[in-house]
Image (cartoon, rainbow, N blue to C red; front, side, top):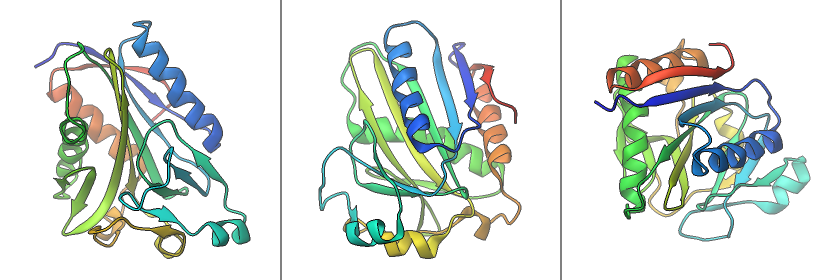
Amino acid sequence: MTGDEMVLYFERTLDPVANLRRETELFELVDGREQPECVRFWTDSRCLVRGRAKSARYGWYHEGLARELGIPVIERSTGGGVVYHDEGNLNWSFFFRTSGSFQSPTASFDRASRFIIAALDRLGVRAMFSPPNRIDVSNRKVSGMAARSTVRTLLVHGTLLLNSDLKMLDRLCIPPPGCPPVANLSAWKADIDAATVAKAVIATLEGSGYKVRVGSGML
């Protein structure tokens, strides 16, 4: 049980540039100890969000097709490959304060994913953490994660496929080696939506001892 405060942000804009800018802003606020730890949910209009450098290890995207279709490609501050966003995809972030001790990337992803996995379990969906940075359900990928850290702050953020356009995702994205097929959570829970997931995450955080305070947005 932590007894710590966790501020909740549920964003309303679908602008991917503004949403990624907000990630940087919150990271700097938590790193500067200007606000408590926080959890954030947001949704983007159709786009691709890429890591800082191309790597076959993390997968990539079909650049020519993205240009042909007019799909915006935005670079995020974290590493990893490329993820597809649309309005059927809920994005989530955890901003944790850290004490300067080293934590492996896999341990960082495991730490954040526990809250998402426990929340899905509350909704009747049995998910599991798949190292280094996935959440799977029945051997299907439903969430990918990326992270960045300083000695004072850890950001772990990820996708959560609710009811996304998987045909478009598969056309645009080149999966990393060993990655299973993607799937929408609606395949297991037909009525799942962003508010339902966010409420389940809040309940999970509170059950872990966090005092959740709403910073912005309505569920």
